[in-house]
Length: 432
Ligand code: HAM
Image (cartoon, rainbow, N blue to C red; front, side, top):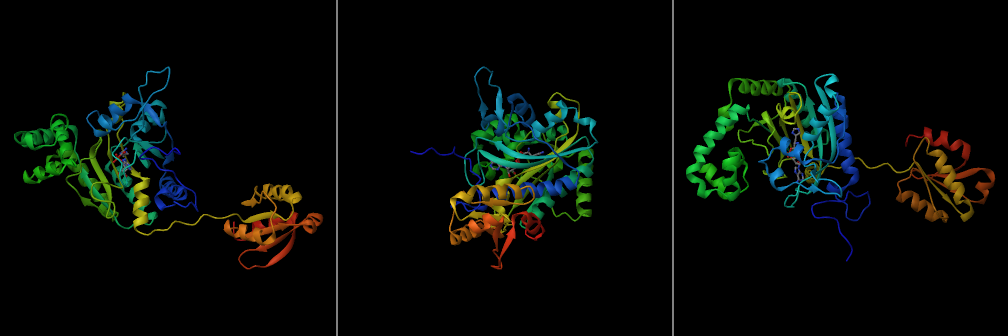
């Protein structure tokens, strides 16, 4: 049997593929990252990239030992001659903060705004929008604890999805407070759930000890029933004076900039590094339990990783989920441009000449050629299939005269043009 790709992974396909859908289209992926680049780089974010695998310890300390990601979803990386303490990165933030600390990036203008994109890996149960290798666009800001930075980060995330044409998105905003607020809330939750421990799912029994807040995020139906029966008070009720003021400040900026959001007191997030502001981006067609993206502040992460205290905040969205949402909204992405000219030889002996002309033209425009000689009708059909603006033919007359027979594929007009003139003629046409 022919080998297949691993479960939970996707091939990103070129245009014209029989199995093409927007969420596996290589061009659509590029469109999303290009759009993110445009929006984020206008805001002063630099592009940066970190390795696809990191020390397991980095992820454990960063994302948190009690999270599902670390406990169940890490892909270990083994190779000969090494201790094997590496994992494929399940997310980008821990690596970005490590790189910031390790490379002395705090010497750059502060706050340091940076973005990246690339594959992330989580050994999850595979379903629609839940993959084992997925892709994120990720934005991080290091060096400021100001609520203005939080609001700008949320604004930017919304800008990217709006620029992609998505309308059905919703920002759900919350705060998970400072560590002492969280301790108080967790103590409250332990007290509340302890008498009902036998009704909790096995996972949540475990969470009751390690991190009771995560029970609220449980996907188990019986857990959710218990949560609504007990009328659990939200984290927002437990914010201290400072974290409450910070949350208010973020909201004031968002209101002033007319960013639509909904306060969602139940925002928990699945990673341990968050403090204060936390939010998720949801979409009507993706389902309540799976967000398009999420983010939050992580002021203690740098210290947790052994570096100097550096406040930080950021977000990431899943490119696949963005594309599923775009597909559901019927959004089309700009078509890929074909070659400006497709050059075909009418005899085998002129194929090298066709190639040579195309190679020369490529210093200024998109040019392609046929690897075999073709009849004129086939050459025009091939030019059309590739979306060429012009098709150029080389037969014995043209070869002798140093010309090509150039057909404008839109108007059908055909002229004889000297090879020397092709660059200026095609370069000045409005198709490139
Ligand atoms: P996260 O909420 O774990 O946050 O992931 C962000 C987004 O990645 C999700 O909303 C979802 O769109 C996508 N995603 C996550 N897991 C999968 C999966 N198995 N299949 C497909 N898509 C998935 C983070 O990763 C944080 N690092 C975000 C952040 C950056 N916070 C601060 N800075």
